Length: 389
Image (cartoon, rainbow, N blue to C red; front, side, top):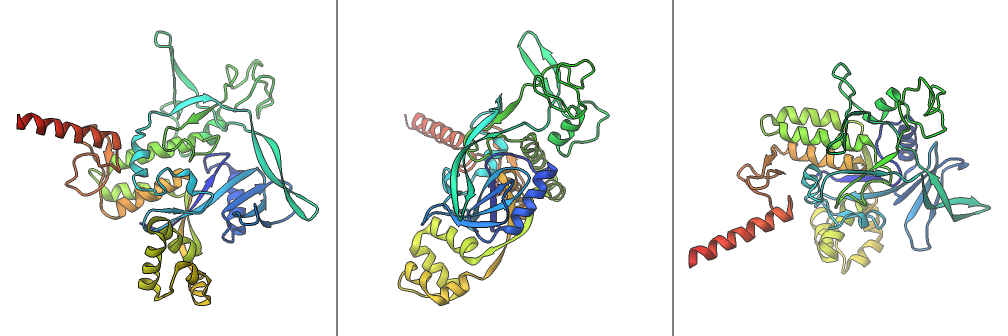
């Protein structure tokens, strides 16, 4: 697979907000290999430090909004490296993550009340030191998906974007709906200067702020306040995977268009983007073998090699990577890799979920749906026992 540099924001989702776009570019410019990136309003200048004497390296970037970003790498072997980012991946790798994203085996997406504030240990400069203080961060949902139908019998409400058939095809539901119906809380004013209860307001009732609750394995991977754009990106990927069954070329074209805001070209080092994922997946012995095979680097132990000037010179060389933003960016990249390999998605003959792999594959493997795979194995064993009787 394509080597990736994965940026995982922890507070806000999406990529379309103008201030976020600007802060992302500021962070990309400032990054020099750190595992943590803090975007901090009011910071006097780019500042670098370690969170602990032997802890992860961090960089603070002056920006318009507060954000904490974990930067990790995904190697050609699919394993994730980076001490702060790998903890969010249950298996330590991205294998099977795309089919889980498309099928959501952990259950459907749910909406729940969004917290108005979250507690966060954030850095600040005090004299010549970086000091962490607990702060309360106010979060505001961006965009309001309008209610188009209320079913009194089932007590269900139906949300829809775009709001009507004549509206253009959506690109960023969060930003488009924010312009269409500015969200307000009780007593607050929207962009038109109207309070949420005032006559003539674009919002007919008080807005209830919600957040998207993602099922396992994405619960901890997505930020605290995921965006409707994250959900929309997933829906587009599902449609593209469906399209690939009949038209791989067309699906790949649509994937590149949809992924444009989530992917960019980046640069890392051979150590971070190539060797460290091998260490995670194959251990020190596997890393020694790989280093000798690819770069003719020989050492008695990996520890000795990493201290060698020869190793440091080669492993410190720049290496191009695909830079991806958040889980949607990661899954866009995995989808593009699949389509570029000429592999179309199909439906499992047993559960109907989308699966990836060779054309002869008909059922979920353990990387697609562990539950479906185990149940099929159990059914095969029961059938085998009946035949032996």
